[in-house]
Image (tube, rainbow, N blue to C red; front, side, top):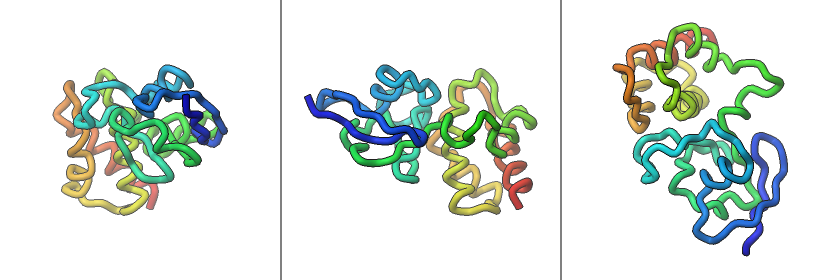
Length: 154
């Protein structure tokens, strides 16, 4: 069985994985990191979104071994030391969550956007979040949360 050597949220791990194991399975089932969720298992809903070497990916359709010798960042890793990232704080203050199932993926997608474009327009925010599905809201509060974080950041 291959050994996956990688870092998750700054911590080094070695995990034996089957060739067909996904990164999401390793994160949730072997490392007990629960922010990435299994939503669709086809890469369509965005609930499993994480950063792989700084790039936003869908962990449910990414083979675990793709992360070998790389850095994975989950929602737990964007705000070290138990403090909220400004984006997380904006979601809290602006009621950008409903049931919360999609929230980690939404925040990761929004974080990717703000890393590339610190002052996005409303349309750019909508486009950046378009690959993330929320079954509870009309997205208004989610978009407002990202706008608030962008305003705070600048």
